[in-house]
Image (tube, rainbow, N blue to C red; front, top):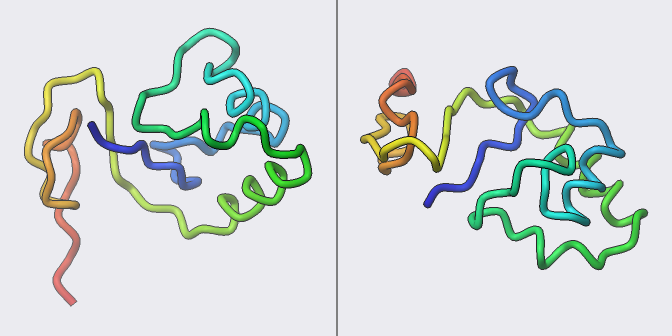
Length: 98
């Protein structure tokens, strides 16, 4: 199981608002409907204060966006980006050599 990409890249979670993030962490469900993957340790964070969760959200907003498609419902495929197997791995491009 792979952890979801939580950066602001359009392929990831740029649509989250602070309120939606807090609700998701409190309930373990996105939009009150879709259950978070077991790779997301929301249960460890659900009892944090709103102020702490707002700070975490602000930090996540500050992280550089990264294109890395991850999905735990699709069959695991080799990912040239991270070198692991996860759903949608085959859709990621390897990073350019520096």
